[in-house]
Length: 428
Image (cartoon, rainbow, N blue to C red; front, side, top):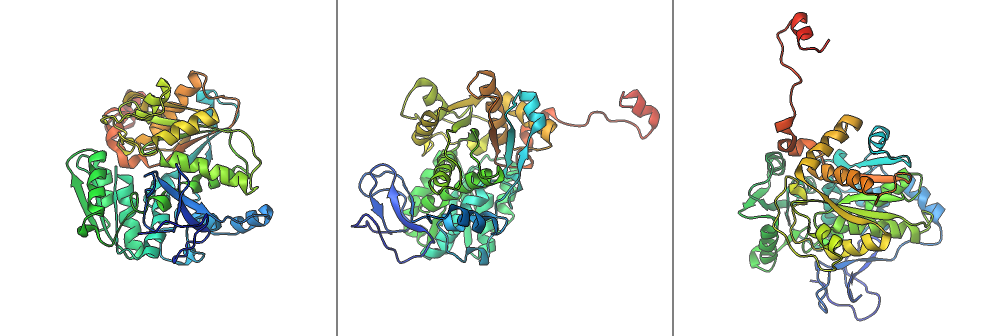
């Protein structure tokens, strides 16, 4: 375990590129790089602090643009070794930013609407990004087993990345996940353990396992490797801005599970401004939740700073975290940027999945239905400005959550193999 640094800067036995230390988000105390996630002074969350390149933004842009077509093009800004692209990994990232003109027309957006479609990652969700960073930290700290608590997508990402990188894997999920996600997590041959309970029960179990001899040598990507893992979400911010021609979008709609993705996208945007890679201008961040698990949205609407846990009850199981660790920070970001946090019910989620598929040919999982549904709602209630640029995140593939749309989706007609039957069905 890492030790507290006595100076304002630290040195560490491991080399993770520009990562200089871990810093407490609450009190600012710094620690050597290591597998710790909570401040030993105030128990606040730790995040990676950097010695980032400075003084030559155009040179850095050229270096990035000459890099591989995956997240390793941003290696100079991430907690990874310089030779990361040469190691066996899944190489996620640089997914499509789709100019969604037909969806824009449906929603009345005139300022430019884009869908960042992360379903194109190796295991078809954004979780491949965060796991790729966590794998490098696990290598650096000498772990032999990769693990996680997961609502589904992360389990598959860890299983695949572990096999590719040569780790054993053992991941833990709620017992009642969607069948597609269970199969995708199990197919890689690692250990997959269902826990009777919801995600918060799974997460508590994993926290206990970390402190037990049974967990010796285990890297839990979203617990003891969480500071590094979270940095993978910054690459979404980097890609969006690069794909927009090195410009900040005016508005972003981001799904909320633990809240880490939203907070790290904001961190990435601020880093790009700091480095001079984009021109500084105001941007608004909006958080999206499902009504059946909306603790952050509830707190935002009530004007509270404390996020009270809820028991999840929604088809959007990838977002079903009733006690989100980064919830208070999401509230801060939404309020600081002039954004908001909103929620939609299950029926609106399904309608939004179908809307995105019908207009843009993108089949989103339920989390994508949440972001599109919330986007529609925020436009209708005047919180999103339709005359300004807008980026909506789709974080996973709809093939993982078929049960959400299957009851209301199927053949237009079933006919006999004849032209007359085709005409009778009114399809000619």
